[in-house]
Image (cartoon, rainbow over all chains, first blue to last red; front, side, top):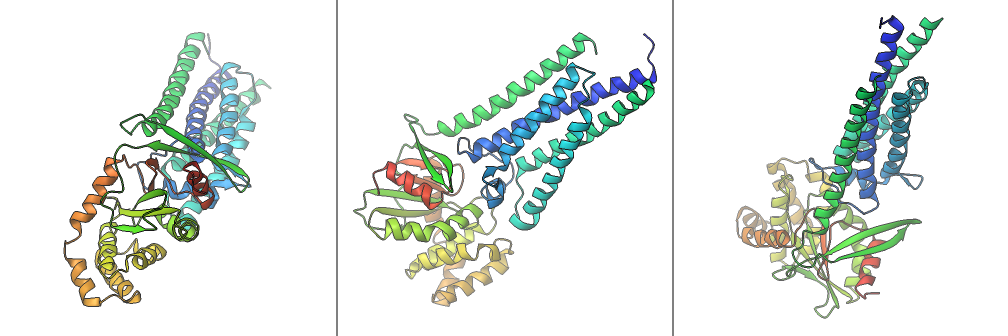
Length: 155
Length: 241
């Protein structure tokens, strides 16, 4: 099999989508953990102090919806899209995933600002969660770049 | 992508998912079963700002109250609550400054609940041990409650202080609540309350304390501070209206 530049780019797209899938899955698990804590169903075990302060602050809910629940929904959506993209390579999911994770990343920038300067406590699992979103953003950006490169070479 | 790569990838995903869910379930289990006998759990639900909330209370073995030094409320009150707290812990501060006054008016002052406060200074809070000593020293002049309130109210001003700066702040607080300055300073530098504070910490460890604040309500452990709505629901479970 001769690998054309287009094949190489497509191969990389699948690789980036695999990375996206892993980040989305980890993000879903962390958000789920924080949500269960919010519901009072699970204790929160954090390696550094601050989780409770952040999770008990007024900012842990948005219009009555726990932020962690929004995280579960967002990461689950990203996971399903990324996994679908891995299994069905022709699916064009990269632009949508990149847009959603960009929005997600902006939300995390805002929440990190709140943690550092308003609540003045850092929640370990929230930081882990934001790193997962950063991973989503980086790899979906790479996937978008390589998939549009592959698309351009068809013409 | 060939099918074997795909299968390996799916397997890795499955392992991550199972491990993650397993860890979450395990952390819940460990919280539910730290008490030695029975592991009875009470689940209490309440509504706050239209949102349903649930708390879990775990039965504890042993007596958390025995040996308590700071007790408020009538001895005849039907329910005893033992609070384990750290003056530097933010969640304890939030409880003390936002909920406690209402709780005291509704339950302690009305003779429905007797509340004991026990010190549990956490190792990651550098000023917490001295704060506990300061509250004990204030108790010598029957001003424990005033010092307790003042320490929590001003927590943000001293929690980051160096130990010398904190000592100076404490002397100021003692003056504010009308303590004898010299006696307080002598007490603060002495180790006369070390054993008593250690006894509180041992009592906390004995009931499987995981976090501060922890409340032992009628022999059940509640490992978080609740808003007044939550406390009402929990106490209702113990027959207090």
